Amino acid sequence: MILLDKPYVSKFLKETIVKYNFPALDTGNVTENGELSLISSEQIIQHFHDNTNSRIYTNSENSINWIVNHLSFTKLPEYINVFKNKVEFRKLVQGMYPNFFFKEVLLHDLDDIQLADLPMPFIIKPAVGFLSLGVHKVVNEHDWVRVKQLIREEFTDAQALFPIEVVNASSFLIEEVIAGEEFAFDAYFDENGQPVVLGIMKHLFSSDKDVSDRVYYTSKELVMTYLRQFTQFVEELGKRAELKNFPVHVEVRVDENGKLIPIEVNPMRFGGWCTTADLTYLATGLNPYHCFLSNIQPDWNQILKTMDDEIYSLIILDNSTKVPSSQITQFNYEKLLSRFCNPLELRKIDFKMYSIFGMLFTKTPKDKFTEIEEILGSDLREFIHVETH
Image (cartoon, rainbow, N blue to C red; front, side, top):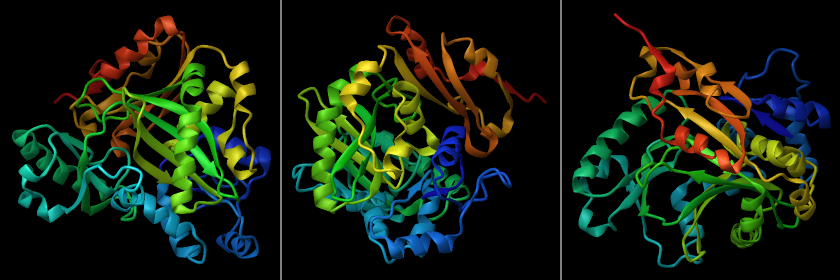
């Protein structure tokens, strides 16, 4: 079963629902009338009463409120809380990482924090948050003043867009900076609690201070390198949280010594905005939605044999122009596409509502990777038109 909600349902997810006849419920008025054959809330609730191994997938964390309210008799709300609350998550994995520093702080206590008590640099992020809202790296005392002001501004804007379950501005997690390269991967736990990894991406950054979500990519080489290590990590995670019939989107870093430390785990979904699962399909032919809902364990050895050696990227065109979205009249998508040798899919987003111009999926030969590096570092100003007075 699938819960569909704002901000975005991809064509691929809709096609998957139709192809495999997955029961779906629109919890956010996000589908066109008659576009999909939908079921009722009562049918989903009854299904979970009748079958303890029922599975449900959400494309958006906006649906979490529905699950908490309607499926409170299941383990799902408990699973959700331990991952949605970043402080609870750090407590869950504390036994795996006993020397890792973290601390919870309330929004109204930010000015009372003694920097001498914290590791410098450090990361501060909302205990419950989404899409890099309020995630900041602090490198010194002067930086801290700037970051506090930014946090207050961001949360004023964010509360108008997302439900309180998704953006809870009252509590923050301060934690030490996690060194190494960053990765994201999708996985699920089956009815016996066994983990199944469904796709692996590397998260690229333009600098040490960059915390944006601009570029993720996957490749044959990447999956071959990290599949075993990431599977071992989620196996240990699943044991600690006793997870079953549950999908997750995991973000980790791996340092130069090969040590893995988790950043966070997002419950009930794969990458938000139908991103990472769709990227996996483009790169591998594997459908993660189908795998989870039909209890399929991919044969990675076979998949890797059939994959090509090119790099498949997801480019999130966040508004990094420093021009307010309200002043931007147009984004030149054609000019953007001309910068890539093989764009696969462009998704235009209402940038005045979400401050994201769109999502672009691309296929790039290794010797043309500079096109990805260039968009990673771009402020995107060359693609916008600004209203003039």
